[in-house]
Length: 127
Image 1 (cartoon, helix red, strand yellow):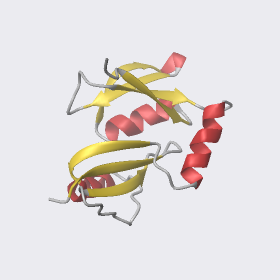
Image 2 (cartoon, rainbow, N blue to C red):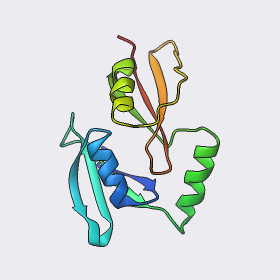
Image 3 (cartoon, one colour):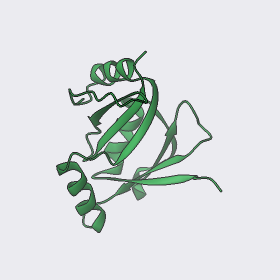
Image 4 (cartoon, rainbow, N blue to C red):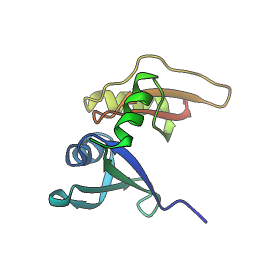
């Protein structure tokens, strides 16, 4: 068994689709603005796990999203080869990057905001 799709709560799936494809580097897998359906996938693994950008306004997911954000907890973690390079790429794309890098013994992590109500983390190497 493997994971084929995960749901990410977002305030607006149409805006999220634009942010995830134009700023975060994902590619569109499925998109229907009329039905607020937005699915993206990693450009590094187009056949991999799909990310459903799920509208959360007016649902229990909005409470979860807000609570995680206010507690500074990432709602999802993405893997990158080089955290420094990725943080610079995200900053250049206009993404809000948290200034505090963390260096656990297995690598490096940093947080950024997706502009859709979520705090996300990247983890990887520092070289």
